[in-house]
Length: 195
Image (cartoon, rainbow, N blue to C red; front, side, top):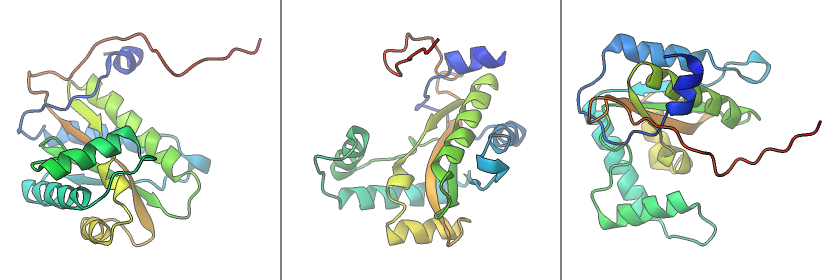
């Protein structure tokens, strides 16, 4: 698949087979993320790749518990409100039971932390689509990055003391065999030309 086609046809895949993709495919996705641009070529984004079901299940339980204890406020993102509501209802699995979760973290005091991590995540999603793997950006751990129990868990998985969770990505084979794909006409992201 050519690069532009991979970008334009990529869609979020949330229903995946439980089978872990071949490690060589996961490594290609990671390589694409690590090749992403970064401010002053600092390359500070850490990738924590989790494929062990025990850790994925523990994270899902932790995230559900933390969200279930939160109160919804008017100034929250719609998707954060939805996560909290679903957690309060029970059986909320933030990573949609995907077999691979790649968490990004970056330095707390680094001004380009979110931008650099976003580039890493986008590169990985495009690569996943090109490799016939499904992917979806996952923000729940970022929203909980200041919760002590979440920080402790992420540090046990490889995050450093001076880092915070910037995002995440689920990865796997689409439930129907292929990732979600399609084209759509953008209705947002306005463009202003100055000619």
